Every structure is written in C-alpha cells, then in structure tokens.
Image (tube, rainbow, N blue to C red; front, side, top):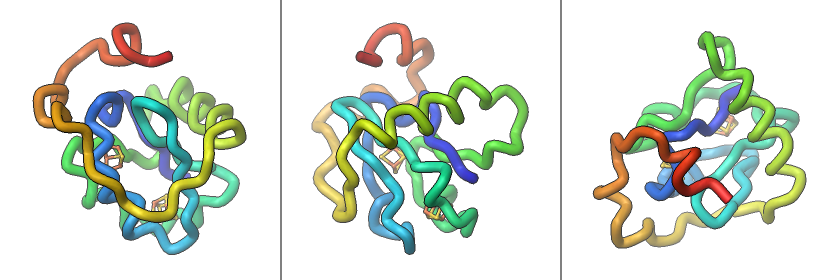
Length: 104
Ligand code: SF4
Ligand code: F3S
C-alpha cells in the first residue's frame, strides 16, 4: 500500500484525489490519508503530490504513518473530488515537525 505522510499536513494540495482509480483517500482537517485496505498499489498518486507526501509503505520508518492512515481512514470522510488547497499551503511545504505542531 501507499501511505500519506507528514509532508501533507497543512499542505493538502489534493492532486492525489483526482488520480486515484479506487477513491481511497479520506479527509481530515489538516491532511488526507489513504485506506491501506482499499489502495491497489497502482502508484499513480505518488508523483502527483507537490509536497512529496505519498510513499510506498515498503520504505523504512513508515510504521507510524501506516498506523495513522489505517486509523483515520476509518474515521474521516471519503474524498473523491479535488478541492482548493489551503491559501498558505506553499508556506508549509517542506516545513519540519508538522505532526507535533498541527496534527489534531
Ligand atoms: Fe490510490 Fe493508487 Fe495511490 Fe493507492 S497507489 S492511493 S490506489 S492512486
Ligand atoms: Fe496531501 Fe499531497 Fe494529496 S499534500 S492532499 S498527499 S497531493
């Protein structure tokens, strides 16, 4: 599966939503997550994210994000159409420590 990671927080560009063939993105206030049980591993969303927030869970160190994607995709609403990114999305691109600062 692919997972959405910290770089999405406060950026939320949502280009990923448009390309997913199985509509498996779920929307929280500050980020999106993927439902790992629905993702078919096609990989088309990975290069679409301007924040490079989407990664295959086969990469090292992503256990926390796999768990977070699994948990919140069962709680947050499904999102199937791209909306406008937040006005300050670019200001948060590449920022570190976003999980501690903004995740709620
Ligand atoms: Fe959707 Fe494919 Fe990305 Fe999985 S890898 S979230 S199926 S676009
Ligand atoms: Fe987030 Fe990137 Fe999608 S910033 S909303 S994972 S395009």
